Amino acid sequence: MSSAASATASGSGSGSGSNDAALHAHFLAQAPSYLSLHSHLSTSLSQLDVLHGFLTSFSADLLTVSSHIAELQTRFQSLEMRLGNRRRLEGALDAVVRDVALDPAVVDGIVNTEPGKPWAEWLRELERVLHATAIGDSGAVQQTREVVEKLKLVAAAKLRSSILAPLHSMRKQLSTNVPMLQALLLASQRASYGFLARHAPRVAIDVQREYVAMARLYYETGFRRYARSLGVARERARRKEARWGIAERVAAATTSDKDAWLLEFAGERLDNAKLEDGPPVVLAYQADDPNYRTTPEALFRSLALVLLDNACAEYTFICRFFDDLSLAAQPGGTSHSSSAPRTKGAAARGTRALEDMAEEGPEPEESASVMAEEEGEEEVQGTIVALSVPEQRALEMRSAGDELWRQVMEPVLGTWTTFVKSLLTPAPPLLSLLTMIRLNTSLLSLASSRGAGRVLQPTLMAFKMQAYPLLQKAFGAELDSLKRLADGGAPGEAAGLAAGLGGFVRAATGGGWSGKEAREFAGTVCGRYAHLYSSVVVLSDEADDTMLFSSLLRMRTELERFLTSLASKQRAAEGAPAAAAFERGVYEAVKRGLETGPAPLSHPRVQSEMSHFTELQRSSRAAA
Image 1: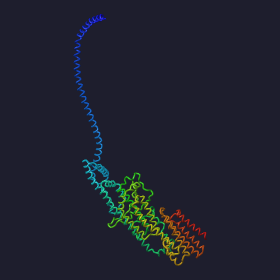
Image 2: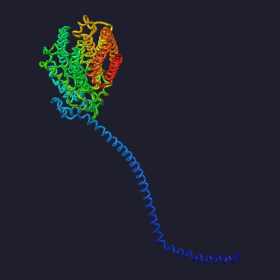
Image 3: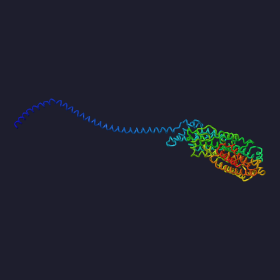
Image 4: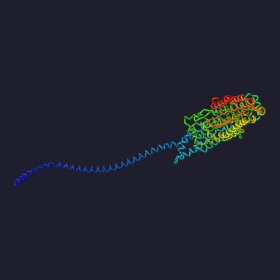
């Protein structure tokens, strides 16, 4: 194997030598190409080195640019946020600038013109700027505030004069149409006074004081003059009643076929208890007629209606003008309480009564009230004498208007109290007293429905507290009179229903309790009782009529006792048939009196009384 290997190796060696030579030759032939390629490679490597340098520089530049871009992005976001904040601030600042900016035309108008129609818009603009500059301490806001404060003082001074100017006529004459004047103030000056109340309270208080002084003098003067006129009429009637003594009453009873007491207390006098459809109020000029005579209840009704309408109208105006009720009444709140009766036309007649006496205006030494017309077009909020329901609700927790009203009407209430006390001294007859009490109750109800109940109630209740004991005393006097008759007393000793009987007074000492005179006397007393009972039914108030009808029941008991006693005397003197006829006659007299009124026969109480005396008549007939 070594020889073979050697042979192979020698053969391989000779072959390889030839191959190396060929390969060497080949490489030599390709040397230029290799050199060229080497040159290109060297160049490429150098260029790659250069490119690597450029790329390294570019990468560094890119990093620098990237950091700049990031920084720019951060700045952009910051600027964008600042821009958004500025835009939001711009909106707020724009609103503030618009609020604190005052139109030069407004300044010029307020400074150079007197209050008028354009002032409403100018005052709203001024008030807006006053509110806008109330906060903030920047120099521009403070400068604006100084300007608008000075402008506010100018406006307040001019508004004060503008509001008070129409009221000066109240000082000069009583013929001033106060409802029209107050309607003008509400329509044209309410906003002006509201501006003063909100931004110049001292000026607003000054306006209140000026108004109170003028209105107080106006009402005080007119009311006192009117009350003085009614007092003249009352004194004339009292003097005539004093002269018309017992002799005249005797003559009236003997010369007339009707009872003088029934003529004196005819049914039309009861109409003075009505607010509606009652007799006309007494006018002031009527007191100048020396022949004019009227009743206490007519005088009371006249003065009461004048007081009520004036007081309600004044309270309504004060609450609407000086107390802000503009937000209380809704657009639909034009109606007032439908249950409230209306004293239609009474106020107008009362105003004429005052004007007839006061054409020259108030004198320095005089004082008291004129009434406002109750009739008038309804305003958006109730009427000129009545607050609407929303207004009344808004006033429930307020008292400023009440105090102003009391300052204005205090002299009027004093005059009213003095006059009604004079009507009650001496005490008027029972039916007159009851008529006044019933009217007073209606006045309380009407004042409450108009929203002025809480200011008028003390005065009206004071009258009721004075009059009610007198009413009870009058019933007691009538009852005592019947008791004396039932106990055998003479007619001349009786009073009230049994007094003023003319010729029958003399019969008590001569003819005694028998015969025709006794029957006529008993019939007269029965007719008077029936008329009194029917009148009380007309004047009764279901709320407090227990005392009235309990007193009438006691009077009926005493009347029956008197008639029974008289029948016994008739039986002893003329026999049982005459006594039975007497009883039937007097019971029939009561029934006739109840039938003729003034209460309707269909009234349950009248029916009950009729049934009672019918039963007594039936019992008397059965006994006979």
